[in-house]
Image (cartoon, rainbow, N blue to C red; front, side):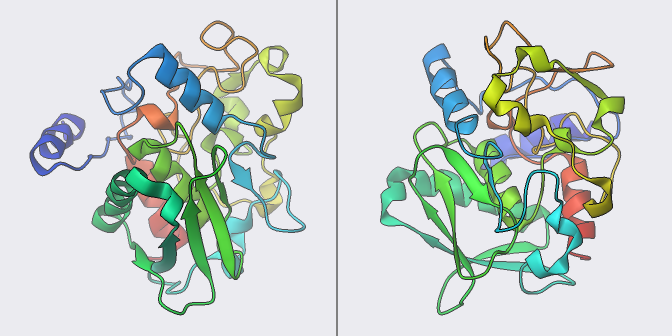
Length: 264
C-alpha cells in the first residue's frame, strides 16, 4: 500500500510521504501535529483566526468566491512547465526555518514547484513570524507576505500555506462540495461563515475528484463555536476530516492539481 510504504520511507529519509487518495481510505493522523490539547488549541487559533478568508489573504478586487487559479497572471514564473517562487525568510522566523525547509522539500521532491532564495526578483514571498498562519493567494506582484506565527510550525500546515502562495484554494470551498460534505452553519462562529462560501464555478478550475484527505481541506471542527464538540462540516460518507496541521503532507490529488495548474 502506497501510504504505508511512504510512511516507512519518511522514517528512513526524514521527510514526509504522500497518501494514495484514489481509495479515499480513512486518514489516521500520525504524530506530525500537536500532541497535547494545549498545543492543538494554540494551533487551532493560529489557523482559524480573525483574518478575512481565514488563512487566505486576497489580492485587491478579489473575495472568497473568486478562483484566481483560472487566471495565469497569478501563477509564478516558469509557467507553463513549472513554477519558480523566490522567497525570503525574515529573521523573525527563528527556529521555524527547519519546518519551512521540510515543507518546501515536499514540493521539490513531488512537484514542479521550486522555492528559491530571492536574489533581485521583483515578485517574491516574504515568510515571517506574524499573527497566525496565513498567506496571500497566488502571485500578487512585488513582495507578498506569508505569516507563520505561534502554533504554525507543523509541516502539513506550512505546506498548506505555501499551497495558497502558489494559487491553491481550499478543497472544502469547491463549488461542488455540497455533494460530498454537509456544512452545519449553526455551529460556525457567526463572523466566520465566509470561510464556507462556495467558489464561483465561473472562476474555478476543478482538476480532480473531491478529496477529503487533501492538504487544502480543513477538519470537522473548523471555526466551530465549540471545538471538538460541534462539527461544522461532516463528510456524507462518514470520512473523518482532518486539519492540515495533523497531516504529514500532500495527498495524491494535491500533486495532480499542482501538475495541471502549472502544466508540468
